[in-house]
Image (cartoon, rainbow, N blue to C red; front, side):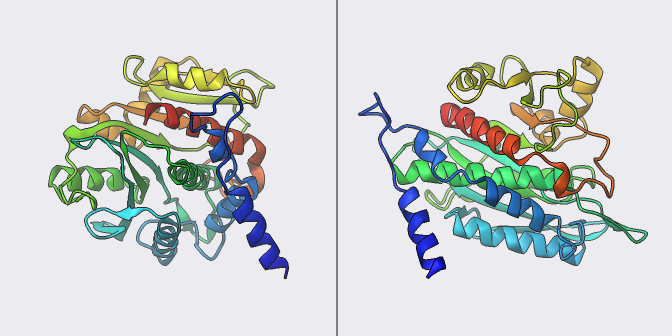
Length: 328
C-alpha cells in the first residue's frame, strides 16, 4: 500500500499547474514539480557505489554505469540518435561508451543544443577506491534531473525551438576521448535525428552546455558564501544575460562567477584545455561550462557523497534549468 500511495503522490505532483499572473503562459514552475533532492542524492550515491567501482573507462563498473544510464534515458523518454543510446568506441583501456539521447525541438530546419556531463572517473587504483562524487557523479545527477525538468515542460506543452541532445560522456579522464568521439560521429553524419531521419551536423549546433563538478560548497567564490555558481564561457556567446535574468527570479540570488576565481590562466585551463567542452570550442562551436570549482577532495578517495551539499546542488540544478528554459 505504501508504494501505491507514493506512486499516487508522484503522479499528482507531476501534473501541470498554471502560474499566477501567467494565465496564458506555460510557466517553468511546472518543472519544479519534478525537482527532487532525494533523487539527486540517490543517483550520486549509486554512481559512487563500490558496485560500480569508481566508473573507470574500460572496466566492468564503467560498462555497468553506461548500461544504467541507458535505462535512465529510456525512462526519461529520450529518443536514441542513430538508432541507439549506447555509442561504443575504443580506447587504450578498452571499449568505452557514450550514452546519447534527444528531446526533439520545433525549428525547421532543425537546430540543436547539447547538454552533457562525463560519467567516468579514476576507478580503483592500487587497491584504493575513488568514488568521484563531485567529479562527476554530481554533474551526471544534474544532467538527469535537468532532462526530467525539460521533459516535464514538454508534458505541459511547452514548445522549445532547439532540440536538446543529452549526452553522458565516457573517457573524459582519457584526454576527453568521449567528447572527441561525439564530435567524430557528428562530423561523419552518424547521429541521425529520429524524427526527421536526417543526420545532425555540427553546423546545426548553436550551443554546448557542459556540467562538471556541481555539488560542492568547499571552494566558494567569496569565503563563507556557499550559494554560488560559476559559468565559464566566452562573454559574447555564453548567453550570460539569460543566466542573470533567471538568477534575479525569487528563490535564486546566487553569486555568479564567469571566470575561475579571477584567474585568466586557470579560466583558460579549465574552459579551453581540460574539460569536455574543449573539443567543441576547438571547432568553433560556442560552449559554456557550469561548475562549483575544484576542491581539495577531487581525484581523491575522499571525494565521497557525504562531502556534497545536496540542497545547494538542487538549487544549482534549478537555476541551470531556468537558464536552459530561456535559451532553448
